[in-house]
Length: 371
Image (cartoon, rainbow, N blue to C red; front, side, top):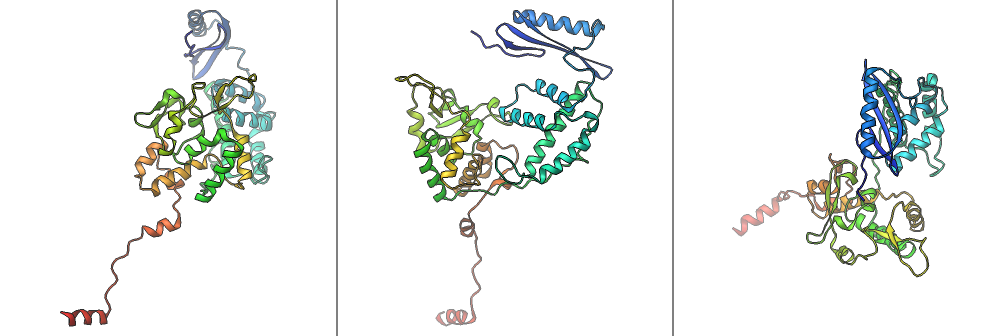
């Protein structure tokens, strides 16, 4: 069976079911009709063309899918979420949190209420970490709210975006200055080998090759090149939509050469929901709980999986890898090494080159006498 793919205005939502959305722009306003249709894809395409034709001829009003008036911020947010229904689970969780906190606010008073909300957010601790919220957390909330308003403007539901950069400026974010010593790395790996062995391979790889967690959990056997000892990261699996190659560390070549046949993932774990006597291996998915438990046992409170990216990039530079090569492996578009490169102080001292010290007068007299 072929894979059903979305196209402009036609998106699969079930077995032989399609969401058909027709949009046109009239006098700088977006008019839209949307419906769910059951049939073939060709029939859905014909319906999409018919709906657009009717909108151009003015035979029908904009779709009731879009409310004629926006009363609460949650109304805008639902539309934004429907438009971005293919977003990552992390972004989806952030949007849902914003909806819970701000969804019931009247759109007329939202800017002032939102300003007070941000003020209170800066002064309270996170319920999950029990720490004061960072500027990065505040910035993510502002960016989501600003994006929601921009979606409303694009669809002609509102005229202006009150979440301006002047009133709600981006706060300065300090890069995380976190890196593990060799002793801490070994301690963490020992804990993982004992408590969560299914994470051993992915953590060892991440500590040596700068990767994002989303890239690692999506790696499959088809991406593996054992001739050149490299792994391909496809463009659709990268954050910046640009593919790259990750080198395989020498101590992990045997691991990749002996992957089991029961899974297509390069990093895997045993499915706990299988019947006794059977073995089904699946991808790691979200391993946040097991990771946090290992960190707690290793007494590494202020360390995140993404920090392995900084550790591995710094280690590559310290070992003599050119900066541009590290940037290509890490898939950075800009020189992020300026923020995330951590050189151990003792390594920096080894790179200092002194000019020869000037000879003293007695040394000069001794040299002259010998001549």
